[in-house]
Length: 158
Image (cartoon, rainbow, N blue to C red):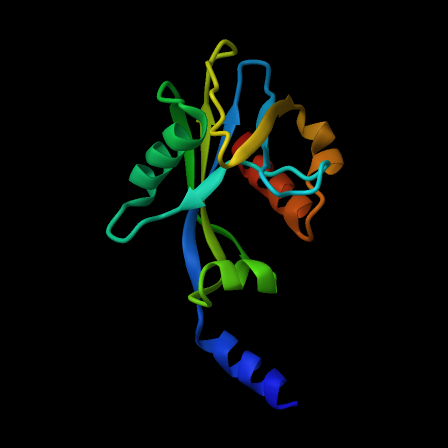
């Protein structure tokens, strides 16, 4: 009981890490998803990364997009602040030294050409795929991930 109270008390004082998520859409209306290092084989996500101290969401998106995929040529079509928030598991909380309990997302939708050159950062990403929105349920397997993806794409398509 005492450990539970300590964890609970600690958790209510932890913050959400501010992060950007970028959804790349090509000319065929396909969406780029990534398979991060350390994830189960069939689990994917949209590319994302943390917003550093003093950095704007736009600057973080451009930096992370280049660091993770080496992409500089894109057209931003939508910026959605506070588009989603989720809690992390214990392992991820420990990885960030108990500073954060999850992430608060700022989502960007970016258009790219079909021939965009992607160079995934091998330290962070195993591989990438272009998929149609009808295939989201095959790849977005974490709790709440599929609903979040569908909600964002509905906003984009309005």
